[in-house]
Image 1 (tube, helix red, strand yellow):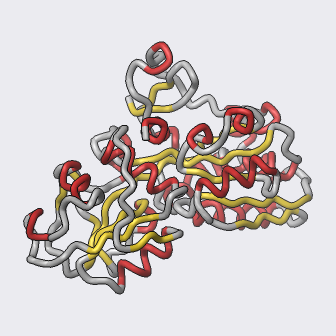
Image 2 (tube, rainbow, N blue to C red):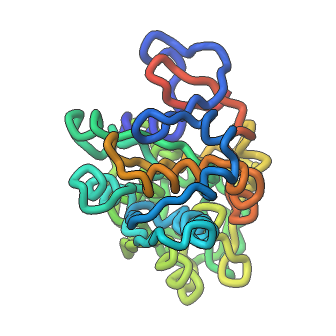
Image 3 (tube, rainbow, N blue to C red):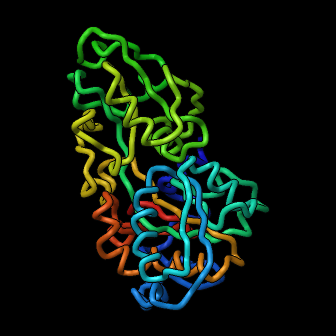
Length: 312
C-alpha cells in the first residue's frame, strides 16, 4: 500500500526530500517535452500523420481520452484512435507488452509493473481528478471522516446507524484489484495499511459502479468526480470538505489522482502526435475541464527528486 500512496501524492522527505516548486516538466514519447507540445498547440494535430493508436487502462478518464480522440481524428483523418477502459493495471500491462500503444493509469507504472518494464515507458501526466465516496439516494449520511471510511471499507462498520444514519446494513460496492481508482481511494483512506476487504461486490469499471449504485439501496462506493451523477446517487463530504475540483487543487480534499498516459520510448509517430495533442492547449485549455477534470497546470505542486508530483 505504500507504493499506492505514492501514486496520489508523494510523502514529504521521499528520495532526498522535495525540490522547490517547479513546473510540470512532462516528457513526451521519444523525448519530446510538454513545453514543446504546448508551444505547438493545435499545430500538433495539424501535422500530416497516419496510423493506428490503441489504448487500454483506467476507466476513470476514458471519456476524456475519447473526447480528445474525436477532435484529433477530425484533424487527422488518416489516424484511428480506439481503446477500452479495463483498469489501470491491465492498461499498464498491455502497453508494456506492446499490445496497445498507450496505457492509461490513475497510478504510477512503478506500482503495477516490474522495474525492467517501467524503464521502457514514458509517462505523460494529462490531468488531475478528484475521487470520493458516493452513497445511494436513500442514505441520509452526507459527511464521513477518513476514519469512518476506513471502518466501512475494512468491514468493521457494517450499519449506517454507526455513522449517524438509519438502522440499515451498509452494502459495500468495491472496485476489483488492479483498479487505479481503488488504489487511489485506499491510499488516501488506509495509508500504508494493508487491506483485502472485498465488500458485497467487486466491480470492473466506473460505469459499472454508476449502474449498480443507481439500483441498490443503502450502498456505498467511490468514483472519480467525472462519473458523479446526482440523479442516481449522492456524493458525500469527507472530513467536512465538499468533493469539488476547487478543493482538490489545494489538497484540502485529500482523495485525488494524476491521470497518466504511458507509451513506449520508441512509440510510432501517430501515438506521439496524439499524446502531444493531449498536452496541447486544444485539450488542456478547455476540454479537460469540460470533461470534469483539472488541468495539471492548475495544481499547486512540487516534484520530488524522482520527478513525481505531489500537492504543495
